[in-house]
Length: 77
Image 1 (cartoon, rainbow, N blue to C red):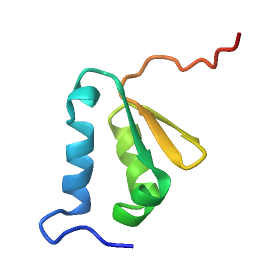
Image 2 (cartoon, rainbow, N blue to C red; image 1 turned 180 degrees about the vertical axis):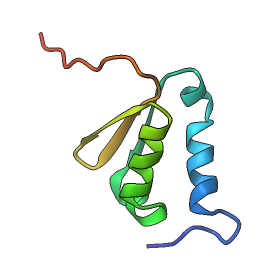
Image 3 (cartoon, rainbow, N blue to C red; image 1 turned 120 degrees about the horizontal axis):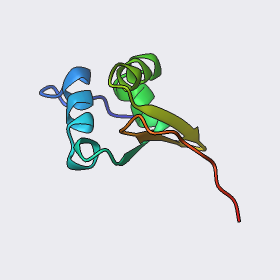
C-alpha cells in the first residue's frame, strides 16, 4: 500500500476531507477504513470527527461521517 505523497500530510488530508463541498454543506462523506488507517490513523481521524462536532459510523469497510450534529436514526421499512 502506498503512503501519502510527499506534499500531502495527514493534517492536509484531514483538512481537505472536512472542507470538501459536501462537508461544508453539512452532508455526508465516506472513506474506506483501510485508507483512513493507512493515511492518518483511526484515532486521529475519530478525534477530528469529534472535534468538529460531527458523527461517524463504520459499516463494513467504510467510515461514513455525518458532517453535522443532527441525530442519527436507523430507519427500516
